[in-house]
Length: 472
Image (cartoon, rainbow, N blue to C red; front, side):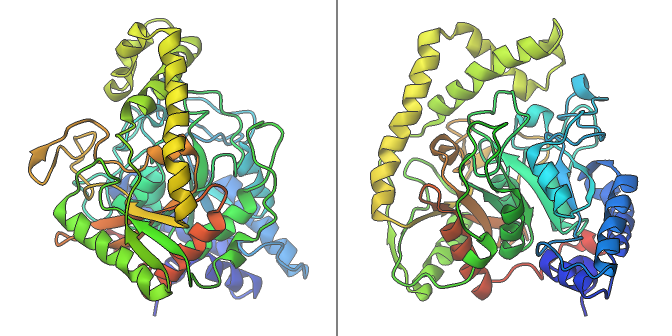
């Protein structure tokens, strides 16, 4: 018989609603787990038990008073990535420059989760300013992969994914400026959704990621993520790029079939290389969509690797933002993987920055006709499983050195296009490491991405498989 901490968040909420357990008891249970497990994983960096217990008691009082839960996650606790502002709770951005920063206001999504009755357990680890695909910084212990502590959980939402994978909370919030939700989901064997750009308002955000970052959920099950998106999505004028309300219930959108859809599958996104074992696992997962009534074709857009465009967009914003925000001489104190982008910016001209913006439109010009032919696009989330902690990324593919720093990651092109995309657990390597399959949808179609993921989860469930550290 499973314990409460192993249940989906929606099931926990139903039990709270039936008054078989209280939200306060659930919060205390997860803090007990955090005390035992977190020293081995390093997922959480700041806890806020007083605030969480107070919020849980408020939920319990409303339920005891006969109130019908206002949403399907009422009383279920969540974590928040340490790049996202939480009023009165330290938000370090993984940087020594912000080691004691306490925001005066909540991010929009935090406001919404609090209003929905989801207690905030604490903040999860991130690399400095979210600037790399591993989760270590100069402030906190390195976050480790629950499936193998010598491997990374990915980044930059690695703390969030490791928290979910090891059972230290049922819900987590991350953000994704180049793969920072999907890569940790792949590495950690959990579900991660990057909604369409602007679906979840991103405020306050005045940083290098403003044009690239998507806020979204990391969970064990697809429906838990859909229920979180129902809470977090919707316009807010503080973020002028936030989208109008879609008029959808994302949890309800998980129901239904995929009969008649046309799906493209590519093991390489057309320009990359993939570890043989990852190709095999993701290929089998992609073929499963044929059983759903989909027509699956191996195809991909004719797209050169857009790494130069992506790095130019990011770095041209990163340098002036850091210069405006940090004290003189800051470069020598930055994480080297963040600082490595800055010398190139010193050589860029305004014309180079504008050409990078043109490059984004050219990427979309390639993807637009492709997605006119296909409802969904399946591709490995990345080219290899979780790698050793000391590296930024896998240092080779099939025994050959990398051609470029972003070669293993098939996520960042869809930050340039803004499309919704998710990473679903597709299987495990012979070494017991998770592998994720990326599902990319047409613009604004998170509902179809979620339905496709839910159909896959129904026939290839993953949530009942746990790493050993979860039981420590």
